[in-house]
Amino acid sequence: MKPLLTDPNNHAPEVSPDDGWDDAEDFAPKGISSGTVLPPRRLLAERAAVTPAEYAASGLRIESNVTRREAGDDCPRLDVQEISGDVIRLERTSPGLAKTGKQVVFQERPPEEQKTSGEGLDWGIAKAISLRWIALIGTGVASVIIICLMILPSINKTNAGRGTLPDHDMKAIDEEQVEGMDAVNALIEKQPEAEQIFRIYLSATIVDEVLPLLLDADTVGASVRKSWHPTGIGKDWVPPQDTAWQVMKSGTRPYALLEGELPDYSKFSACFVTKGGKLLLDWKATNGYCTASFEKLTKKQGNTREIRGHLSRSNFYTDTWPEAEYQSYQLLEPAGEISVWCYARRTEAAGGACADLLRTGEILDQIENSRKITVRLAPGPTGALPNQWQIEELLHADWLTP
Image (cartoon, rainbow, N blue to C red; front, side):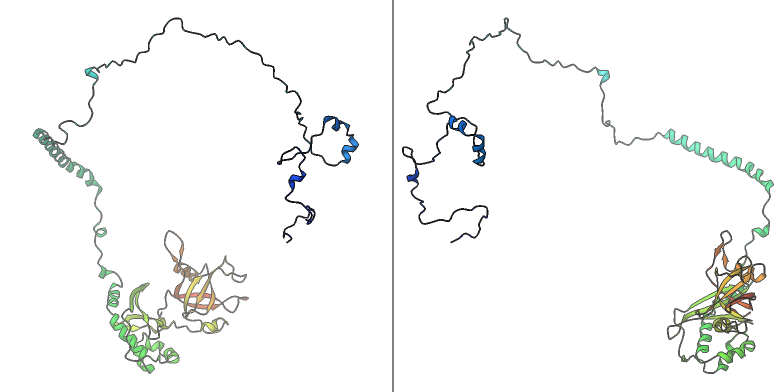
């Protein structure tokens, strides 16, 4: 069976049946016992007889340069020089002193140098304070108090020439005497009445049920009849318990806001004022009434006599509206969807009023994001875009009816 692994560099001859394996003793030279057999050693004379050409022709040779000694060669001897065995010893002429251990002598420390450490024998024992020291301390404190009381009149005498503040500066201000406080206090307690008015307003089926609840019904009656329509809310609806009631002042005019959610979860904000001691719904402020819709304003159309919206600052300027002459604003409709650009001349009363309205804080020039206002608009100069208007007058710093 041929082996699976073969070496291509080892070209061993094939094994034949005539090869002998167990008769190695027949190949051993006579007179030599079986075992390791070495070829006979060549003599030096035979090596010298080989010429360099023959040596090179013979191929690669690996030989040892060690010269072996033949059995009949004489073994070289080592020259041994013998040294005298006498040794000179160095010995001590006189016996040495015996070593003794170190002796320690105790010396007692002098009495004046002895120190003690730790607590004394009386540590932790309360010590009584002498009654004489208690009496001295009490006398000293009493003396200091008496001296202070004696010099107090002289101190007050030096301050007598300064005078006192006028009586009107020290007089407490009565809240009822403040202008408009009576109306504010009256509005605070009118939330139940406001909720009842607003419930009737939403559940009304004809416009005649609404007009008696409104402020200036004779003036706004025509506008209400034109834009009013039933809401479809039933008469059994009542404002939720979390409805908010806020009383505020716009200038010298107090008003209140009723804010909450409708049955469809939409937000509402109803404005109420008092007139002649009667609580009324400000229809214009509640609905954000405008004499022209913002859709018309974007096309430079409509009556701009009374426009309500959210006013905020902007930085949109053109050659028609230079920044050095105008202040740019953005006016957003009450519904919060459509806006137009408005410009107020800095040197006019409307420009100063709008700038003061959006500025809060006396030390820092803080700017409010937006503010509810009621303005009168006018067309811009030649070259203005259709959705650009000039603020002609600030009617009210809120949505209240002027």
